[in-house]
Length: 136
Image 1 (tube, rainbow, N blue to C red):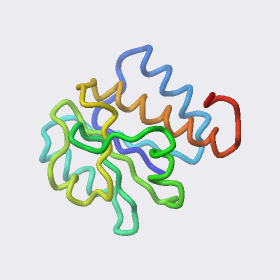
Image 2: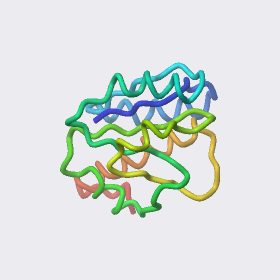
Image 3: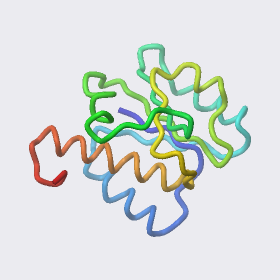
Image 4: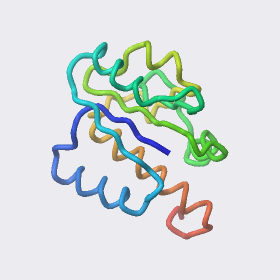
């Protein structure tokens, strides 16, 4: 499983929280793309995506799901790639190859916070699979 994210985590609290979850998810690779413009970011993102990947993009116009629905999106796909865009969002070249477009809310969130929310939900799904009480 891979998270491709545009930009670096710069806010100390968000960065620390992201690292807290990520270090417990050893199977999740994180690739950071330098923030520039949507077209350049798109070209960089696409370099890391293989035809065999199941791509899920985080986009405000995507589908909202609950945690169990989120877990179901990727449960059988070890080759899942999540993509979190930068402050301008994602280029259509990336969105069109996505199997799913996922929205955390109709509200707009900073892309750093979206990345934290994504990794926490992946962590939560792992705990659900393990029947661990974290999700309660």
